[in-house]
Amino acid sequence: MDTPMIARILRFGAVGSLCTFVYLGVVLTLARMTPLPPLANHVLAFGALVPVSYFLQKGFTFRYAGPHRYSLPRFVVANSLAFLASTAGVAIAKEQFGLGEIGTIGIVVVIIPIMSFLIMMLWVFIDPNRDAPAPQR
Image 1 (cartoon, rainbow, N blue to C red):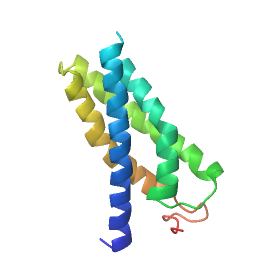
Image 2 (cartoon, one colour):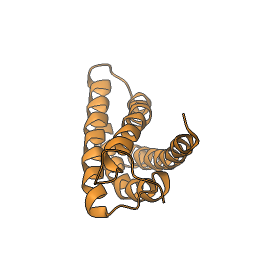
Image 3 (cartoon, rainbow, N blue to C red):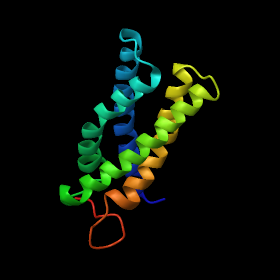
């Protein structure tokens, strides 16, 4: 693995860690302060992170200089896929396996980052004129 890729993974991890802590703060606050079920808490917390994540991933992690008109729609699709996968994971963990809040949150914070990095690197933040990651600025 080359040095730029390692640096990108470390930046992604830093942004992901920040977003994870924000997610945990929001979801746990909602769990403690509202009568909402875990799935509703998850939906609200996930939605709150989309704009924060986009700008951090675009500018810091992938250092993508391409236009928003190209990367933003793809980011929304990628996050929609991550949302669906995480929501299904939460629902299945809760309903089929009887996991509580910690177990359902664990699914979101482990599986989704790996899936998201790959999708963003290979599809969201690539040069629109070729099928390879865009050069960093």
